[in-house]
Length: 440
Image (cartoon, rainbow, N blue to C red; front, side, top):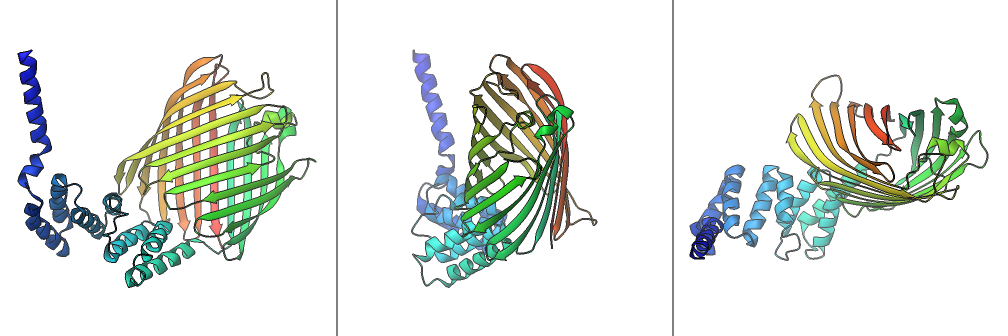
């Protein structure tokens, strides 16, 4: 018992010493003033790294001190490290002591990152407190100009094509072309053609040849709506209406709800059997400065054969390496679904779920032939559970290339190989995708 008491005392003393090591150098807040002043002077002379090293040491002793938090955020922004600037600013973003000169610097950092809506929200909020601030007024105008410039007014032509091996090896080819034009501020009209083709002759009755029109309107930087209508050229009774609403309160968060009375995402074997489905979806995305990324989507599909499918998918990822010419991101993906109809003509598990570890490696190429080029390797490995068939491993391997051809055109293509499981049977799959976009 005495030995245990001695060990407890030693452990406590060591713990106190480790926690207060920085504090011993600055026993009082006043003792930090000299170093704090020196850090600010170094920053004004352009020695940002040396200044931040001192400030971080002072913050370790007094983590809740506002002047230290303020200057660390501002000097990080001066250095051009906007990620760290926002990290420190988040701690004091609602502090009434914030002054326009700090808010302007943080806002400029947001604009440098393309976070125009966040800069607008920041300036709008603090102009209520400082209505006569020329800094905030100028920053707000600059953010609004940047946001307006992002709404490209040129006509746009897009092509998307991909192949998919649906339902255990049934190859399906898909092609979507679209042309859109702005007809009023924030409003675009578009026409689209959607085509699917199946390799298997028994599935050809499920092929689509659909033409449609629609409108997209951006009410403000936060609110967006899209409404489209389409009709299959060759098959009667396959009219489609799709409505999409997005709410983007900031450059970090995006919320989305949609409703479609004729889903294009159901298996082609269902379409070949004259089965359609109404689809409702809700999605939320969190994207923090190309750092933490989180996405959640929930779908409800009501099939005309009485099946009710409920599906949930979520993904979270984080960059584990960010270098000028190479980036790596590690993520976790979770999926689950349930279906009410047994013995459907298409793959329709009563319950299933998967968990996948995904690794993405990007190589940014510097060359003269294109504005930019990115090579991307995608690796994933996980497990898949299907009720009645147990759990099996699965994997995937993909390669993508993305080109910024000119200031007005981009091209992306990719190939993918995967090992999946259907009703307990392993199945090899291969596919490709192609995207091209041009502004006139």
